[in-house]
Image (cartoon, rainbow, N blue to C red; front, side):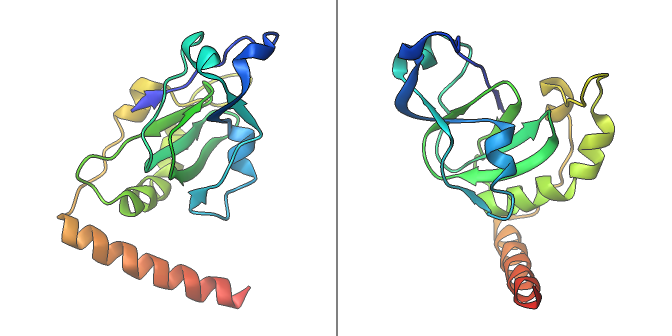
Length: 157
C-alpha cells in the first residue's frame, strides 16, 4: 500500500509533466469506470522528487481515503496521487477481483474512518482491513460473474 503527496502548488516546475497525479476530485468524475483514464494535473519528475508522492506501478488500485472515502479505480499506467488517496499494488492477485473486493468492503472502511472536518481512513486502519483471498482461479470466476452482472445492470439504465 502506498500513500500520496503534493508538491508545492506555487512551484510551476513541479507540474505539467508526464506523470499522472490523481486526486479524489479526479476520481469522483470517473466512478462509472472500472479503469482510471487521466487526471487534471500531471507532475514533473522534479515535482515527484520534491514531495512525499511516490511513483506507483501500473495495474494498481487507487482508493480515495478522504474527501470522500471510497472512490476506487484501477490505473493501467504509472501514476502518483495526492495525500487523499491510498494505492494498493496487487501481488499474485487478480486486480479486477481485488477492485471488487475492496469496493465491497467500502461501507466497513467508511465506518472505520474518523475526522471532524471530513472523514479520513488512515494508512494504518486501511492496511488492517481484512479481505479473504480465494484461489486465483476462483478470483477470475468471481470477476467474470460480476462483470456479466454489471453488463446486465447497465443495459437496464
